[in-house]
Image 1 (cartoon, one colour):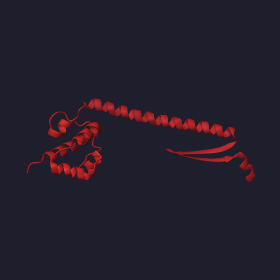
Image 2 (cartoon, rainbow, N blue to C red):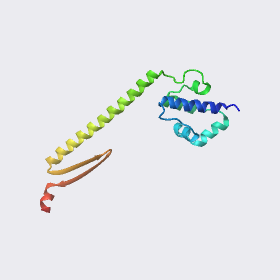
Image 3 (cartoon, rainbow, N blue to C red):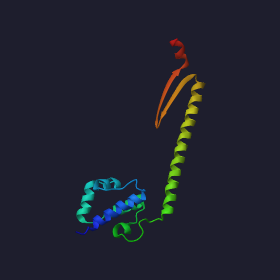
Length: 150
């Protein structure tokens, strides 16, 4: 029995995503595909029943994985809309930006801690900063309270 248009497209999407992510993601089931596209599994079943690929899926696949909509639908043309060398450059630029952004956040947190420490010392306050991601716990104990406890 020959495959339906939907089944052929589904297989191409699975192969294309696997290649785009270098094997990190390879949808195998309707549930996997729904998660990949950010839709309900019932939407996959509906598309299969209609034997068609909704245009929204093509847009998502092109934006997230650079899959060529013509290739997804027909199997003809290039798999990706941008050559692999260019895709690699884009991925590297995104990774560099992510690293730079992380370094900026760390520098801002370090500066904040330094300023708060200086302010606290100037006011005679003991200040402990415990940074855990976005959560900061500050415990303040004025110096005069320490003397009373002695």
